[in-house]
Image 1: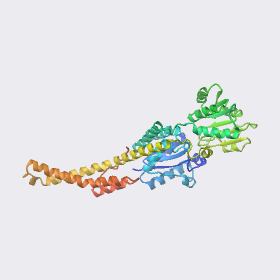
Image 2: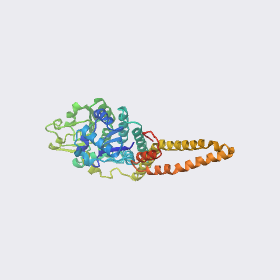
Image 3: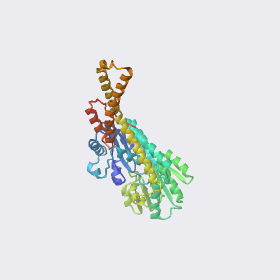
Image 4: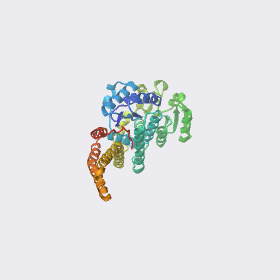
Length: 423
């Protein structure tokens, strides 16, 4: 059965729409229960840059309608609100798109490091929820392998801190040099660790770490050095009181920072909100002396070629070659039952005709009978060769393998089982 990807990314959707469509961890069990009723297999990939659903579907149109309905109902967002932002790569295009995403080539910063682990985690969760079977499991494993190859064989991921660095650079443009200033990082994951490193490289004197888990905040603060202090989110207000720059990058489902978290007489403060959904309530930007930038602002700051190196073309070549190999293996596997059935059908016809002529063949010598049987095998092989080659050629296009395979099976009267395939 075909594979379809339906989703929206930073390329066509504003951050407000992405955060409305995004799935938190707590949303996924219910989402997968819904998806299991709609499609054969599914994997949800929800990151800061994108919300995408990969599915094994009966056809493009039926699958597209099912996934649009799923997004609209599960996220409680009217279809018309996100229809223009959707992309729907199908079959070979869906394969190449996922490989491109896993390689960091479709990220806001080319080669950003987090997306590969996000792709890996998306598959693991889908498998735990019973939604990813052999087709999508094989596809996502191949995507992860391709992403690793791109990073190992090219320099596409040479600047993993570029994403957070762009936000801090905007703060420096607005406030002047950050050396000697105080900052707060909200979060404790990889992006938060990158933020700490970038702030320290800009000479920030004090960095406080705030996180829902105080233990994880303390662990990051220890790595940051003696000038860092850890807080739970209940201590966030105290940390913000002395801050001039705040970088926030949590995975929270709602706002982490609102107007009430800032003291009435707060100093000028610059927020870099790297989260989707956003961590900072937009109302914060209306307070005097406050500036907030989010991922939409970073799009303009980074530009289309942000983080690009001379390795981009090489990375795309790796992705294209890997996607082509995967698609070819998948088509071969999907045609294997049909080709096997055709050959078995030919063998049955040949054996039946030789059995029918057996009384007349007894008058032949052993070598003559062997020649007749060899001739029969050759005729059958030649008759089947052209249909087999032709169906392989006709199934090279996306979404055509099942249609042409069924047609050929019907022409020869074959009962070929509907097998789901992986490479």
